[in-house]
Length: 365
Image (spheres, rainbow, N blue to C red):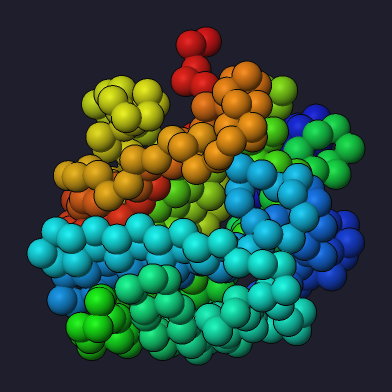
């Protein structure tokens, strides 16, 4: 795996032999403890375990166990459970439930997160997720098909001293899912394709990240994880591209140097005021092989201004500080095209979900 060098950069992926040694990581394997707790839940740190699935009955599901609100990492341990469920008939449920600190526990040697009676546990291959929020409950079994992967060490480092960290581990880049979801007492059993990743850091994301597009999808024999992270203004809006392409569950490309990112048909979202690309495209060139992965929006799943979740004096303070964060989630099509030289070899298309996380103000420069 080749990664950009960190020399003279203040926002980049940690990828040197010294980085692997310092972090106790291998460049060739991933261990179950890497999906265990990586922070001590103290003020200034944050951590979450995330799962999503596209289900064969047409439903879409997101579950996240978070040790605190992303917009308030300075808080002490203040856990939350998030469940987003989009039903085939168009009904949409977005649940975010606060829990007391005593309800949270997370093992260090593997993924085993408990939030009251809710649990997220696994070993990099098989996961069980059970969660309830109001009238929505889910029981998920996720079985990995693509082995755990990370971009180099998985750590993005910011600042001249490289001491500010945001880390990311796609523990299950793609897996088979069995789900039972219940809505107001009505139970549904189905299957689908799922994904699980784990994120943590020691600096508020709004301080180091301006925005990111993140997507994952599957079309034909191809599976994709793709992200384009733009660092905050103090770091020169330095881009950090992340890309993984697998064919038949084997990774065939993950070198960010070989990726070009494109945006098309940009519009301003009326709810959040953020610029949004109707199509985001990742072009991966490796010798004669060129893979073009496009995500094209057909509808919105979530359009949230982060300040709307902040109440009372904290909301006033956020307004006075000019906080303007937003989270947008889209549904649409993923298309994967494989070119060999000037010849188009194959094209595959499917449905996908992706997101735009926007911590900063819309850029004018």
